[in-house]
Image (cartoon, rainbow, N blue to C red):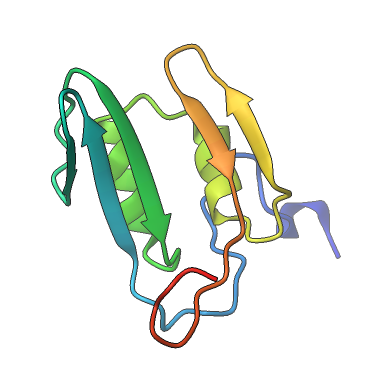
Length: 108
């Protein structure tokens, strides 16, 4: 294989095999109370962005327009073989967790 056939750094390529899973992005926002929305406006207080289903690259990449997410972090999002980790960035924390859901959609 030639070098140019490998992925370049910061490539946003889904490495999984579940292309049929819809990408769902939830915004958990806490200031005085907890609100869960699909609206990604930048708000005061604390926010947690949860991404489930990684096959819609453009939908997830659109978060960069609102939040200053590093391109290498986004690359880690799409790499399903990424190890579990927590990174403390200057303006946000990034974490990777592998979770299992049952057939009803409940977290196991």
